[in-house]
Length: 110
Length: 113
Picture 1 (cartoon, one colour):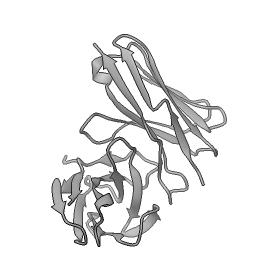
Picture 2 (cartoon, chains in turn brown, blue):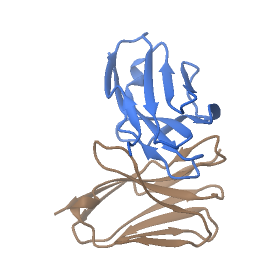
Picture 3 (spheres, chains in turn cyan, purple):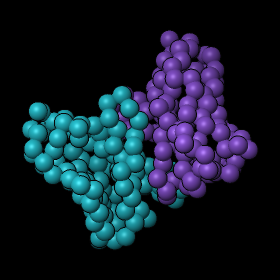
Picture 4 (cartoon, chains in turn blue, orange):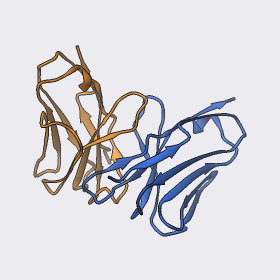
């Protein structure tokens, strides 16, 4: 069945360093969504990518959707302590099975 | 506008009991999805409902059931509780289906003793 793999599982950076998490699928994705979950909180929607090769930016965050629509990445430039949390990619699949990546937990040392 | 609301926030049950969790979506949202999240893991999909019809089901046993009401609120029922059912249960609403952004409630923390 369709799977979404997310790497790395954990990332520990110094404040000011960059951070990237990758999401890879075994099948072509119709779209991909990214969410952030702070410790003790619930997932919060960040962005949705739909088009092949799409790139979207939100301040220090850059989201990409691969040309083959099988992978996606989230890059954070110059991390801050407010970026701490777990970042998940999500795909609605065929809308019958909703698939989440395992998430990348980001820790930022001040 | 109110966000997604879930009740109760915390619940303690014993093995074999049953539980009902409730979710009210954002006004105007017609789709509700239920997830189970164990500490350190991503959300695991349980059910999705749209316009009171079940649209999708994850790999959970028949002890788990759900329904959506005419006002689009939803209930998740779990029977014959097991220790492994201890988790955070999240409800998410979206306007139509999960190809649109999902908005999550704060969840119900269920502990099974």
